[in-house]
Image (cartoon, rainbow, N blue to C red; front, top):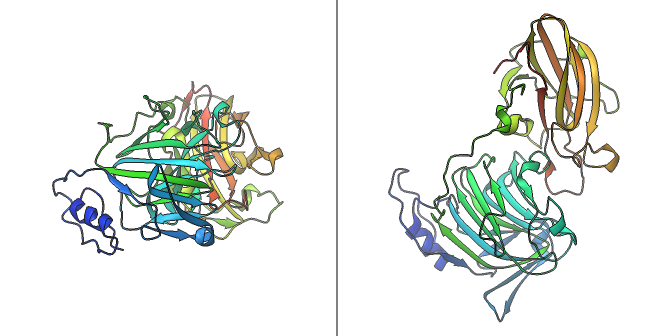
Length: 400
């Protein structure tokens, strides 16, 4: 299939949707004028979709009164849409969960390892929970649901009935509307996956119907991300050096002397939205685990003093100050006993401790063990990240 961004060659795309055997032509120049189109209704038939992974024997296409374009009953796995490459616009569909799981949709799916994802947690108490619905970027084979708890919300979801979902996607922004909501049920201030465009893929267990894609219809939603007020907080550490991956002998804590020497192999990385050092953008889930990396930052202190630090992390972390181990801890979603508040998600609430600083320059080094095998049942590895804040930055000079 030729990959054609919607908004480049929409007449050919409409023809392809009307006739799935019609091959899309190469896109015109990127500066070409956008061509308006009508909403495109996608039938639920095996001519329009192909199963992925476990779905190959777990999907049925059903014709039923009230659903003129049919229903896709996806008991497990994923269904990928043929012949559509999506950038901006509106995606609407009806979804009926079939079990307690996280059914939903991936969009702008550039490949199996990079996409944007929205899903419902179809639990009996979904309406009462603050993570009933969630957006998660999928980056380099990691699904970062545990890295961005800011993008989960309560929602008026029927866990065992039909729900209407409308996604309005515009550049780096997305608004999500559930059922009869007039105001967005979830506001995504910044879409964070690597790909600006890509395909659509449904994920079960759920039944799907009434899928309509309207390219270019963004309800005047701005394309630029919302301002990151949290990441601008005083005391957030933004600049780090990152070492290459190294093997870790599980169960044996790393020693400071084992950190790689300060050579060109260390590379500068900067925190992203919310002050997060997103290690998933630096490494791939296919990198051989178990894996360990090291991060290093510096801070200038105007005197000898102790400072309280808030640390958020996913995985296992060991914190060294000027070469001395200060603290360590785990934050894995499984087993339950190793979850840090809030419920195994990344947050500056994960840990707080005091560190001794001397007058002048101080070196903060964090060894990080990955969470690639956090849940062997998951179809995608979970996120891996770090964030750090000096709670009272007075008297400190923190590289910005």
